[in-house]
Amino acid sequence: MAYSDFSLRRVSQDFKLTLTQGTFLSEYQAITPSAYLAQYLDKSLPLAIALGTEKARSEMIICPILIELREILQREISLFSGIDFTVDQSLGLNGICDFVISRSPEQILISAPVAVIVEAKKDDLNAGLGQCIAEMVAAQRFNQQQDHPIFNIYGAVTTGSLWRFLKLEGQNVIIDLTEYGVPPVDRILGILVSMVSGKLLGKNF
Image (tube, rainbow, N blue to C red; front, side, top):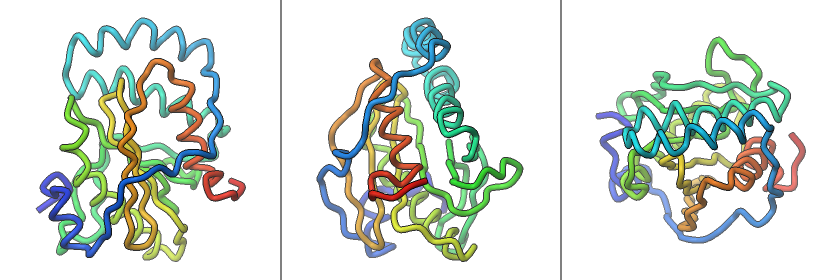
């Protein structure tokens, strides 16, 4: 069993999670993208959508946005793409994560605290919720194992052009059913910066 095997029902049952629908994204400010990202997305987004594959969307939309996030935060965070993130194979917390973001600047190996998990999907956002939550649980346990727990773990399921966000707090998962579209990318950057920096909690990075 791996992350991709988890449905929403199974992940909630296996890890005794409480799932709620709501919003937790009221405390963020939209961030204007760099001229480079704005121009790049203007050219690449229509092509990525036309190609229609998960790989195209990951490489041509999602990854450039996350690289911009890292630049905004002055490379004080680390970004990993398509990396094995096995935390506890006996529980099915193993497999490849599309994108992992850590508050540590260490870029060679994943170091705690892992703060955000981004799961790429070709089209159906709902289909990725169980997998993303399983990866968030793994991040929570990884941080605890590394003696660097943080209060909340955030997640996103995205097609690149549509984003949906989640929060794991203890055993509680909040799923924001709002779909945030790109363009504009300003809101996505603002939300991601708030998640990684902890500003949604009223804390400083």
